[in-house]
Image (cartoon, rainbow, N blue to C red; front, side, top):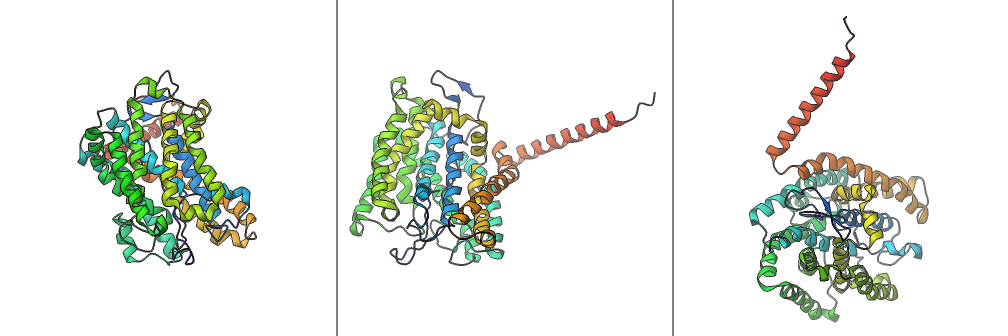
Length: 430
């Protein structure tokens, strides 16, 4: 679900470029069942632990990840823009990393915010996160390993090794390096580590307050950045969780708008979002893509206020046009299986771009349009089918027992329907 971290070329401070992105893992799929939704005077639709619009944001962000990879696999030379300038807005996939992590922190904190910032059990939280995230991830990992081994590798480091299976299977890719089977999987490791510290972050938020929590996490990261050569840390392929922790924490703290006084909820959050985004957009526009990618460490922190204010705006039902868009059936549907779209789109896009497109179109813009026109629908349809098999059963049920019971009920219903159909087709003997 993504401005993505890419392996930079050797001339870029020995960093190498890879096609990687972040995911919409935990957006509004919370750790408690979602009751019926109700409207309110501000225009948003709320259940006890569900905010209308967050699913739609997750779907749009995942779609941007897909578009970014269509661009990245078509035009070489990243972070230089070798494509048309009017497609330059597709280059900043890494910023989706920031947004997805902020959205994850926000959505996971909605329920605790409504319960005095209490989690309701650490083991319960971790078990439900694992139940929700790991089954589709492992299924996508298996698919990606097959594609990377027998069709084409996911990066120029070559096909995945036995170490890759171990590292990615245990979701420790942010700690240990191994050839990747899928460039999108790096952020799964980051988010898994943030899940582990989420209970501690809630304790700090509850006992010391939002300002202390944000300050403690952010100042540590800022100090690390300032201590680097030229105050510009070079990010590698691993150990990104500390750098991105402030993003997750900002989303967590922003969830307080759900229970904030009405005066705070009525602030023009959408206009504040635009004001906060303007300096970052101006800087990126002036400095260009190469500078921006080389300084993502700081750009990530700069863009967080605008993104958290956007989440606050949507949570309070504004602006009206955006709320209408996010509530449309296609966008909500896209958000519903956006995690699956994030997990499996990259192998599909790579096959289209590297194996199929060269046989039919010229490099450059024709290859981009070909990849987009074929890779986009293939990824969306494939992700929808993948989600139906590997994601939705774990989303609708909280245990194997519940899933088994639901399966038996569904099978019994199918048998009854078939029996009635056969009975209706029997000729009348009278």
